[in-house]
Length: 155
Image 1 (tube, one colour):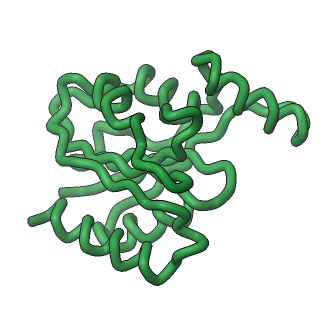
Image 2 (spheres, rainbow, N blue to C red):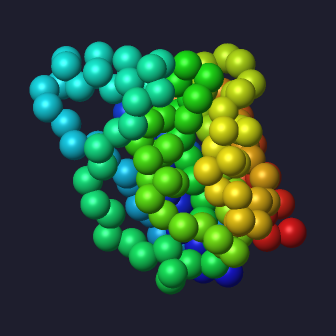
């Protein structure tokens, strides 16, 4: 299977996890970016939009999902939800028939974002999810967890 890791990262946690996953599965990476204004306003607005459930405005990506058999989607968990950027990305892209897995980065609780994220990919072949708690603060432990999960994707 040819894999693509699609992710959104504001603090670098999801980016770090995505890079390890892409290396493990031999896949490509596609970072999702929002159209932004100023740094301070961006931070406040993005997180407020997450709480309110408002959608993000995305910059276009250069990867075609048609070229991949496995799509791994990564998102931080904000207000118990996937980020607005990933919600919008999944709404705009058809994953019908694709093998799909999801990873979440979060503080210290199990994400309640799983069901909402799965609902955005109703006709995909859902392979499972990974929740990584504070990956940059726990690099060694997180990397082991990620590698084991990647092995199960191809098991």
